[in-house]
Length: 165
Image 1: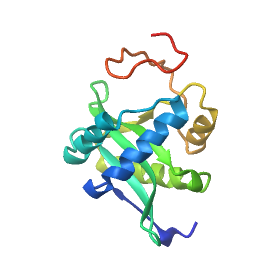
Image 2: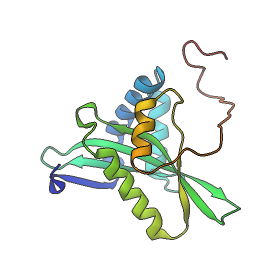
Image 3: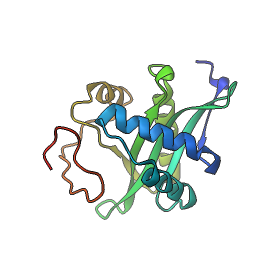
Image 4: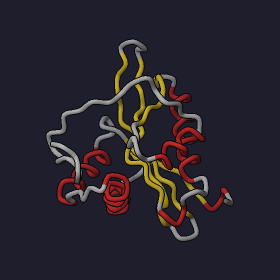
């Protein structure tokens, strides 16, 4: 990868449709979910309009201007640390660009930015328990398995196909 051909930046309103498309592909590929564009689009718009909710980081391929990867940062306050955790969400790399260092470059950017800001306690993410490929990528960049299990009650998205409600 010739570094000068790539640019990592914060997403902007003109990126909206690409972000929506990538989020829809992510849900389909990793969870077998078909997201409602009419719900997803304003959700992405809301992040782009209000940085207190989070921010997207994107990588683009300069020669074509194509967005080739994205991730979303949201926030969790830690009273124990008096600092915020950044949660990586909506991680997606275009199929043609996978296994070429796109996620690692995005992660390194976020890691450096979090350390630079000084008020970030760390970086967290959750991953589908059966998504071994993603887990391998995350371990490769230095993320470690946390000693927690995640529980939830989801009021919006129905159970996935084959899952109990």
